[in-house]
Length: 206
Image (cartoon, rainbow, N blue to C red; front, top):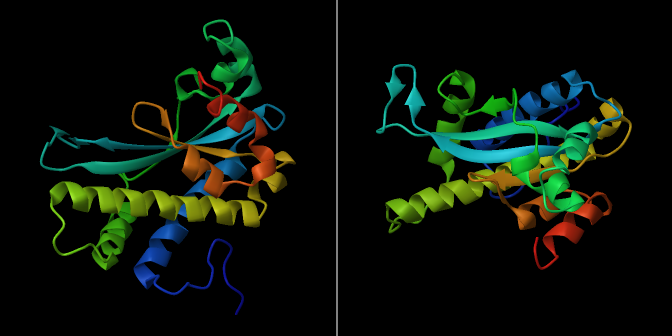
């Protein structure tokens, strides 16, 4: 039987729970991309990582939710943001100037399926036994980001953005505060679609 789109043969060191969680993220992202219009206007997607403490009853500081959001930015928004930014490239590539409405969210308190898969994936991680709380959280966070990097690579491999928008579109990685994750962005995307992005972030004021 042929593999489902978004599923791949597991590499050495990967677990079934890792592949299940990775495939879940892939399916959610793929469905969102296929549902979005603005075919001639979208020039980049945002992948935004953050933590939330909110649950159904308000705020529960004993429970944190590790969240990743998928969204997009448009040429129209870029043009509009030029009026309030220091440069055209800043308006184009800094998260603060992007659209933030109605993102696709994975990992909040409403994501029952995703959180169950994430728990199983976390249990499969080989976290150093002598890691303190901070080291453990850092290990999980880095593993999570690189899992999402692998999802984006698979989306590119399956030409998901080309089929929907007619061209490859970069996925730009950010974390809480709008900090740009340049290395992860480069790792996840094809080099020839990041020229403008790298020109901005390699500049002294980038």
